[in-house]
Amino acid sequence: ALRETSPVKWATNQFIERMTEVLSLGAAYINGSHPDDVLVMAYGGGSKHNTGYNGPSISDIRYALSDNANIREKWALAYVLQKSHYFDSVFMPICKEANRTKNRTFISQSLGMNAAELMKQYNEIEETKNDLSKSQKYSR
Image (cartoon, rainbow, N blue to C red):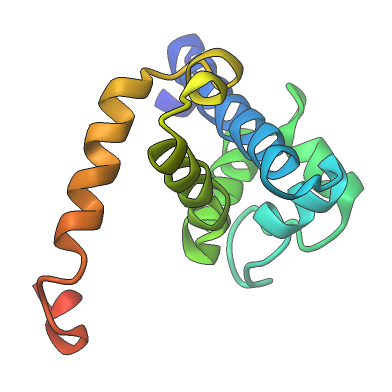
């Protein structure tokens, strides 16, 4: 019953809309990707055995992103996005470029994020990602 409450629906919609916006703007910024291609790359994977599975159908993905879709379909998109690592493939190059050039305009103005804090976290990730061997990275 909780998933049917207005606050949960609002938070879910905000999260999915924001992730989709960041992906669409980010992919267009780094490689000129078409929005439909971005949606399929981000949300088109997964398994038919997962609740809310959409598959690579752009019309099904767009429906799941709409206000008419149920909460399971929306969180299924977030699950697929997390499993595919597509967000990282879009977002990390943006951070890398901003760090290299010191130009954070795209992050702060287009994506509406706190560029200084984001770059601080990006640098922490970069500094620590080689601290452990590959065999130890995911065992903790």
